[in-house]
Every structure is written in C-alpha cells, then in structure tokens.
Length: 437
Image (cartoon, rainbow, N blue to C red):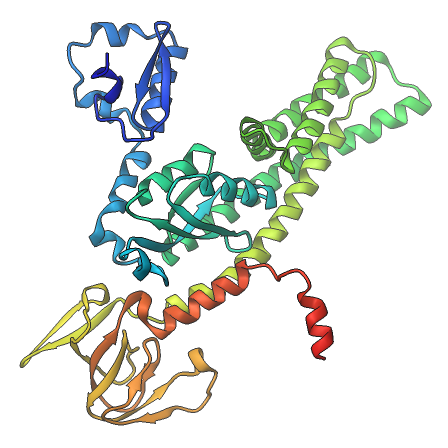
C-alpha cells in the first residue's frame, strides 16, 4: 500500500513530494501525480468507465498519453537551456547561493481585477514562491521563486488549476493571443448585437400589445421567437461570464462575473418559464441588451489594455533575431540567443545592434532614438560602449559582446516599464507629492 501511494494510480509515474491530487475510484481514494491525470481519472469515473483500471494489464504509455499535452509540456520549462531565454537570477540571489529565480509570464483568461487577486493569492501560497505580481493592463506576471523548493512547471500547473493559462513571455505569441482575443470578442459582440436588435423589435410589439391588446396566439408566437433568438446569445455570447463565475465559485470567491451570470441566467430562466407556461412577463430583451453592453464595454477595455501593453513589446522587437559572429576569418550568422559574453560580432550599416558591447574595430554613427529619445545619431569610435537595440547607420563595426538577454540595458528598461505598470503607489504618496510641491 505504501508503494502504491508513491506512484500515480493512472499513469504509474512517481507522485511528486507535496502533491495533493487524488480521485475516488471504486470507493478508494487513489493518488494522482498531476492535475492532468486527476482530470482524466475523474472523467473516467464520472462516465462509469472504472472497469478500465480493472482490465488493464499494465500501466502503459497509453494512460500517460491521456494527460493533456499542455500540462505535460509544462515540464519542458524546467530545462535550463530553455530557461536561458526568459529566466534570470533575482537581485538578491547571491544570498541563497543563486537559487532564487525571476521570470516574466503571460496569463490567459483574466477578465477583471478579481482574477488578479485570485491568481496572486493562490500562487503566493505555494512553498518557495517569494513574489507573484500580475499586471492586469498587460496580463503579464512577474514571478520570483526558490528553484530548490519549487520548479517553474509546478507554478504554471498551479495557475492552470484555477482556470487560467500561463506561459513564458513571448512577444510574438502574445500578439497572436491579442488577435485571437479580439476576434473572439468581436464575434461574441456581433452575435449579441444582432440578437439584441431582433429581440428588441419583438419586445416593442409585445409592449404595444400590452396597451392595445394582442391575440394570445400571436403573443405566444412572439415569445417563442424571442426565446429562439436569445438562446444562442446566452450559450455563445454570455459563455465567458458563466465560465468565469463558475471558476470563482469553485475557488470560493465572488468576482465580478458572479452577479453578472446570476442576472443573465435568472432573467433567462424566468423568461423561459414564462414562455413555456404562457404566464408572467419575459425579459429576453434585457438578457440580450445586457450581454451586448457588457461585451462592448469589455471590448473597449481590452483594446485600451492592449495598446498600453504594446509599449514594452516594441522594446523587445528592437533586438534582431540573428547576428553575425566573427570567428577568426570566418563570419557565421547565428541566433542571438546563442551569443555569449566575449563573442565578437559584426554589425553592418542599417542593422540593429543585437547586444550590449564595446567597439573593438571601426567607428560609426548610431541611432538610439527609440531607446533614449535622442533624435540625432551619436558618433561612436573604438572603445566606446553601444546599446543593444540601437541602429548602426554609417559603416560596419566590430563589437565585443558584454551583455546579452536579460542583462542588457534594453532588458533593464523593459523591466522598469513593467514595474511602473504593475506596481501600485504607496499609501500617502500623494500627500508627499503635495508637500514636496
């Protein structure tokens, strides 16, 4: 029994220390190694297919394949080679032997400030997590953790457990998420708007019938037509409200979507009963219009939030993807991620400088307007230090790489920008400003 408790009952993989996932199978609580196995096992139980565990002859690879790919792929983020691109040592990492790490994440599924509060509270309860701060305007999170106590994949899985999706910051992927979010919002808003217009026309006829009289069969017909038009609005356009409300209720919190879902669901249920029983009033026009106005407001908020988040993204795009590395007499084009401190690179006129470095050969003018705001190019010569992300203008120069990735000046500017967007002013700071003035 003790041996079984250390291995997942579903896939037979070892259960990580501190993991608390289990499913009651055949009236016995069975241990699971991750939320993926727990979800699949629970689905098997709910559908009455527990004989699967009795008839299987061994815990083969098939059971492991039932784990969602997204959860399984989270383990890849623990690879040091992959973390090199987005994980850095914390400022006080030297105090604990370099175990404290920092990373920037993108969170999907955030709809209000309550989502920020829920995710921050949930992750901060994990052992080994020192800091987890979410910026609602950009949907980015800054996480700091002790790599000896907890792995990054475990943090990502914990976020997945409460209904959100998290992955390392990738500007290209974030732009894809922005487009997907906009297209979904527009489709839901279009369905709600079309339904609201049609139901409102029918509602006007019903309101007029209450004053001037209407045949009972015609009134019943208009009610059923309104029900048919409102149902797709409820099932498709209002779906995000109900999903977010159910997620909040499972976590025993009351977010903004809980009263919204109650209002829409209650009005629709009352109207459905009134239509079927042909008694009382119906509120299909309120359901559709309320959904449409809420979706419109969230769409406007989403576009403003995405514009605010593009400032940091534009800084990331200043770094080119490839660089020309000089090795003796050979010149090789390599990914910027493969550069190391001390490499010699060639930057031709018109190219962006891929990393912070010192000019060891040549001289040229460099455009730093996107970084410093200086409109005129600055002349640099041998021995001068240049900033990654700036543009070489006149002639070719050779640089010795001094800083790459998260250690560059551009990365520091980006971190300061993200910090300014995410941190809240301290209490009393406004009074200090007034006193200083």
